Length: 581
Image (cartoon, rainbow, N blue to C red):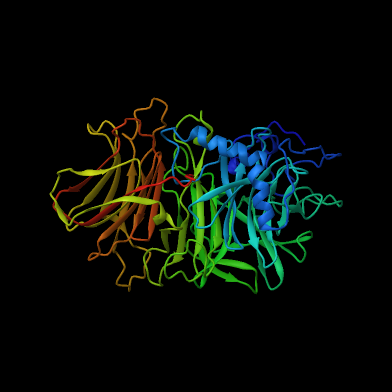
């Protein structure tokens, strides 16, 4: 089926996993009850041009094979080649071979974390699943490509489910439908597809009846011996028929044959008209469940709620955002998430297994000339459900053994931050650092922590905390003591972050966070060549790409607006590369 009408939804949805290969959607008019494409009379040969290898079944043999594997040798040389680039991160993961896109299938298997992602191999730029492994969620080691296209045209986004004896990956195979593959070897190097075609096809059956659902990014879980899967997309059920997020639920006994059930999410007042439900993840968190998605209109989002297992429905009770401005340029993109094991590599003290580990890719903030600048990954985050009655839904803290990267520690404070006077912290400087600052704002309306600051301030990235700045808690019950309390805001302001002529400017990334009147603000900041991530009191995180160019754009300073504030303490460390041998 060919149509001259290019529907906006299809153009946007095609970007969930690719900025190339959009022809699957751009050639089709979107009609919710019709297939995306006519089924071809004969399936083309989509065999990948990338070398594919079969690995042994024991860890020792696999490790020996990897030492001489041509892809591994090439990846190693690629990392050496780019290590001197001033904007290549030291401790944030990026693809060794070419650009990357969405992270996929984050999972914990046999004591190791596995990160999959959309890779674009140099031999064949169609999306494959790239692969990296980590002992601690921080030090990532490259592995060969995991899942190759064929019979699908491209391997788009998906999720993974870990069972006792295997890992199941479910993902969207373009021009075909949603695919399932399994692996059970120690390093998840060998993958077998469950069926020759798509277990959930994008085409109608032999009866020709139109499908009541769309087939796109899936996620997978298991309940009562049955497999369940969501497929992302939209329904025209908003005002005047406008599109809203939809996720269709499927069920299977054997991974090969799937039964469509119904739309999954109900009572959702948090998603927006225009959201499209890409890259979904659905996992338990605390005593509830969390659903995460990427919207091409409004960025990364999450819903908190109750899993009605008897009805196979998800009733929403809360929600929020991971993006607080556009995802591009320079912003956080799509999630990949896994339930947190009770005991795992990189676990913090007190980890209970009731959290969720999530990682995002980040968009470039400049014209993409170097492959790594296409996208890279954030640090992993540990998400937890905050206690009932908290004004914030979700706890967010950096995950993994990032402390193992620290060297050259420095301490500042306690000290007074005089009103309206910038305090440059002598000796605290760098372009790959971790900073933990605790500040009592007192009556100051804004606290500013500057990083990547040049000596003449020609370049500077500003981290701004606004105390009780006007976001009022009007959602609480009018009888609640929390009604009318004011949220604070955390912001990354990058208008002077770079002197490069090709940087795409953006409005500040600004999120609300609740800080009580008698509470200090704790800023946990990671800067890494072209990345800034800021965690606030374990309840919020903002992140952005920036591109300082001057050699001395490495300073750190503090400032209190209006009235004096108190710096309780500041600790800073330089950070080592995760790729140092």
